[in-house]
Image (cartoon, rainbow, N blue to C red; front, side, top):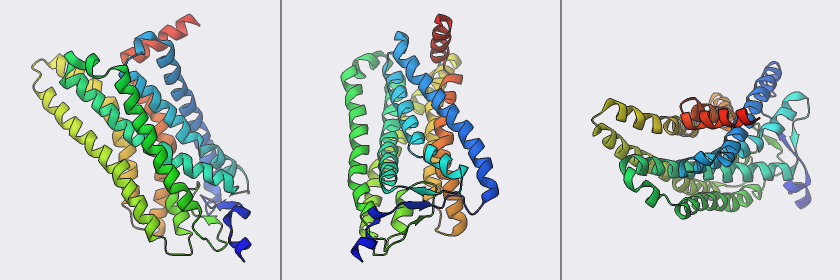
Length: 308
């Protein structure tokens, strides 16, 4: 009986969108295109930030980290999802499920904190421009990124084993297209409230606290922009922050909306599409958002393409 209850003995079944077979092929084509664009866009941002000396600044150092995280975020689940959408096999190995859960928790946590770090960078650039290079020196930038990575990894190291070791009494069907923590917790055949409370505590520290810091930073930024007398100066300050603010709105908006929904079947379907949104659509849009309104990135792209 213990052997039958050991979840490591079998694969999980990702239900995903299998209840809508006509939708699966459409999702496969759309997701393959979006994933290809996300990989190409984020890889381009990373290469430009490495190759062009003009982009060796704190802002683009953080942007390169964000692009790398977006690559990890999408790659942790989308290839497996494409395999499951393509044919009748909806399974994922136990090891694959562990990797997905760990990647989802760590990369998601890192990105939440990194977005707060980027908001602080914009605050210093606009509110203290004369001291920007003194404050945002390379050592501080490395420490801030290390804090973001360390916090996300601690979240994953603590929550992944607790989630995966919950007894499931032979249950294999995950009502999602990836091994996401809430879906795995719902499969438990014991009281999982202690794990849920710990997850809620981490969510406050990793999601709500960085969001509060972002809002405070932009409050100071807005006050500083309103004090700028010239319209050109205000426009430049707005352009500096608009890309990051758009990314924050997309990322946090989808997460907050999804986790505030009640647990009925329609909200579960919405949850799948919203998870797909911030796992695929947001990483695909981020490079476009940062390049379309950014002269430095467009200039670096033209320079690199000109060399080729």
